[in-house]
Length: 234
Image (cartoon, rainbow, N blue to C red; front, side, top):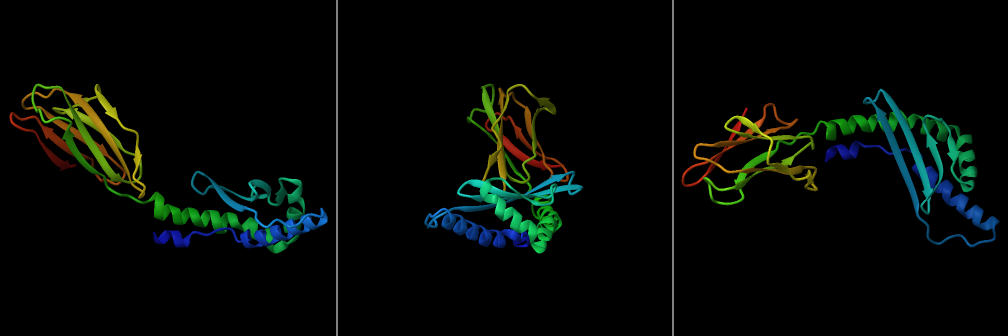
């Protein structure tokens, strides 16, 4: 997706990596140990939003071998050591005006910016569902059966699926699967209705979703020889 290219990460990541490596080397030499050949460095940038971007809090966490050693919290405004090893790093970064100002500015430059990008690319994304009805068995009349309303390939995940029989909503005998992630930014769900159809019965699966200007309804009609389904909109 093109919006991914517009996302930003905090600019102190490169500085943090270099400073961390120097701190590790200095600490190892001071303690008479060889410098580690392998280590894992993690950087986590977190943005917390309240009521859109009315209030934004940014937190950057620096982690060495699974242990957080220093962090910046925009509510605090300076770097704080989390472990003793993080003290010299926090003190150094706080003494660097450019680094500190960059961290403080990241709330606007990174968090608010990425929110707007994500809002356009994710929060406003809409994919209309595909709705189909199928019975679990071929017997159409006077036999206990299960109608399956398949609602597939929709985004976002919020969806409302209801069953109607002859324009009357059915609530008893309705069973739904959990929401299923397809792995491609779309979802699907199955909503089943236990029923014993009589001649002339019309069953309707009614779907409401943010991508739709009006609900989708799909009908299944009980007939003497077979049953048919018909999709309607509006």
